[in-house]
Amino acid sequence: MTLKELNKKCGCFARKIQQCTQEERCNGHPGPLSKSIQAGKVKICKVTGDRKLCARMASLGVLPGQEAELICPQNGSQCLLKVHGGTLSLDEVTSNNIIVQSV
Image (cartoon, rainbow, N blue to C red):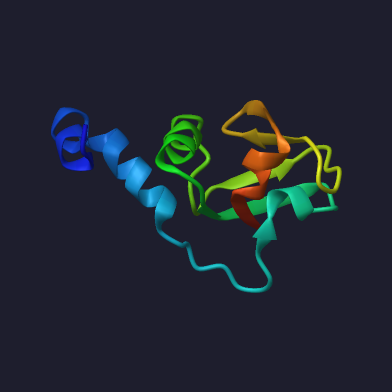
């Protein structure tokens, strides 16, 4: 199914997927979530990776411009991300594809 067909069936979700690949303006030095070594609030700048990963992150509410809280960062390892009242456990590959900036 193409993005155009998906947009006809479910316009709101297709826009969220498309929004994942657009870069949000982030001042400072954005970097991968897996390299964040300090717990606290972060702003999601961009979600990279394939369409499947982007769609998965969009369905979980991990979108550019959203603020989230990094709970237990471990450099290059799994991390916990609190977003929209829920807590996500992300593996290293996924957290490498989420570009964030400290708030």
